[in-house]
Image 1 (cartoon, rainbow, N blue to C red):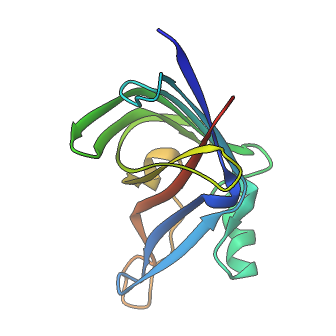
Image 2 (image 1 turned 60 degrees about the horizontal axis):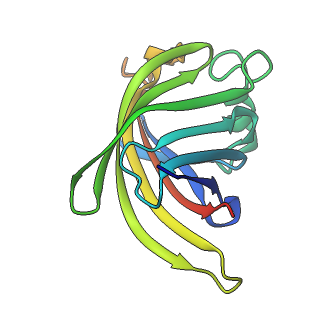
Length: 177
């Protein structure tokens, strides 16, 4: 069978995360620099091989002091661990436009299996004749499983940061010629 390689179109993609702060509100952040590919049989994404990497130093929560803290050893330790990597082990259609994307996520030197939901948005040609597809990938990971264990206590003894991190990636892929 012929394979098709797809590359992440960074101009039309985004990677966000959400974490609870003080258990009363949610803080949203993004990673601005990332890349990835999907290799699939023809134009079908069933069992595609997906590889994705994020430059941890590109974390952006719209607050400079917080971003610098996130880049440091308490969190991502971007000097020692500059990349966050994902490599798929399976990509399975579940129903309609819904897929399960399973794989290994490596962050701060720790690799853990994850299962993410992927919703296929469709396929179109852009104004230049390039074939594009879109996916929204979502899931939740526990940051402590990756060595991101820093936390502070509030005045009442509660934790300042939630452990579960929601991941939301809207990814547009371009078909390579």
